[in-house]
Image 1: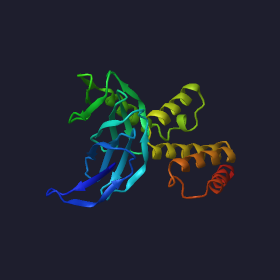
Image 2: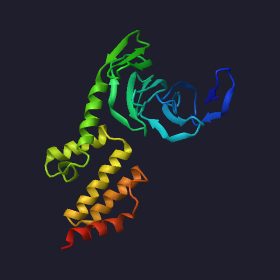
Image 3: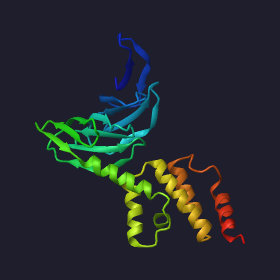
Image 4: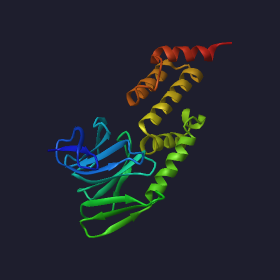
Length: 234
């Protein structure tokens, strides 16, 4: 019936069915803290839910065929999925795919799990093989490096091609939506203060709000004008 249900240990349903997928649900997993649930479906998407059955955010879109298996990473902030498109994908909790699909299987990926340390991932497939992956370690390293540079002047005000490429890598492959929004706000503030460019600052602030509605507490143009004034104060 395309739904999920939460049950107690005696087999009694808790609350109402979780409704949101348009086709059969193939896989579910609890987050490590037990507060969230991820599901994978024949509608080619994953969905994140709270324990009351409320969908969180939009469906995770990236697989081209049904999602057969899902698992949370040990930090609860990342999710891995396996699909009939023969790939695995890594996601942040906002549903953004991280990096490229994991390619290596020649048939549907039916099972995925992390080792207890979280630095290895194993997958099982209809091609009758298992694959061991250590790419998660690289993703964690990239995320940590990008976070250390989140407010660094070389990224906030990139002047070289190398710095600009580094910004794009962090934006595309490392940061969550809220982290990308935080970075755009920092760039906007630098544009208003150092370059006195209100229009460019407003564009950064508005892009940040599209990613995270709580990224700014002030109206974009008013904030940009205010920060510009600080830069011209004696």
